[in-house]
Image (cartoon, rainbow, N blue to C red; front, side):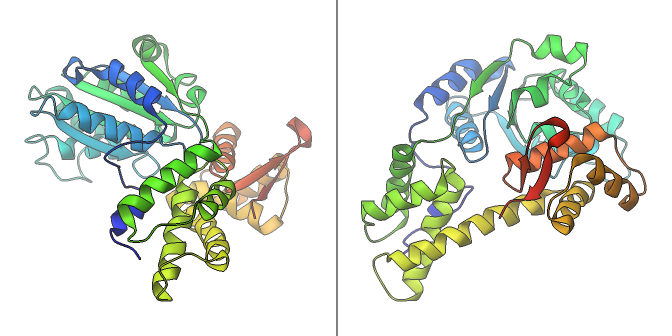
Length: 330
């Protein structure tokens, strides 16, 4: 039943995008031509197509300017200044002839700033996870560097910038992504079926998948992928109610595992505390966090970790302010 498994993967960038024409046009207008070294910011909940649209738009613009370098960096993993700079330098030809670990971040920054070659584009995903936002200044100060910043919340990026950065990035074009509607998710699924499967899928099943995904394209495509695999293993050329229901739970678990894998060791501690207690208030949670790490971060940092887990559907926050408690999402 599966003709092209790549189409069903979360990282797949389609030849045509569904129901994001406005966002594509806004980003294109902000970056065109990409040789100007402009900056754009994409904000919205997880699963709304920010990463896909950024990569799709940048690739389309690069077709017009062939001599252009490109790098994608996800700051869940490359969250320090050193890692972030190294990731960018990896993609720029002729700039990285140094060993990763022994090289100070300042030397990496100098190597980047002294670059005077072809224009390059850097898509910075999960940019609100950066421990040191000075890397954004490093990139802004680099010759012909175009930045696309991706985060869940606009405030998570711009509110914590120092005055030097804030004034420079104030003019960045900001593009908001909202949750997909039911019909929009169905259209996305229909396109994936057309490109990736050898058999049609009844629209009723696609509507049920869209309802279960609740506006999240990652979950929707995951359900489609799992149901198709189930049908293929059983030698069927069609979905069944049972295969779709089983695929729903599996897709949610897959997204959760992926989100958990991106947590750093320190970010994982608050999650483990919540999981152990079942439900816990912020004060007690922070106390447990302090006991479990040798060099605890501030309450504000831990609060940011908790907010991120809520936005990624790893945890649920109930109540307001002092009455707030956290629990793991089932």
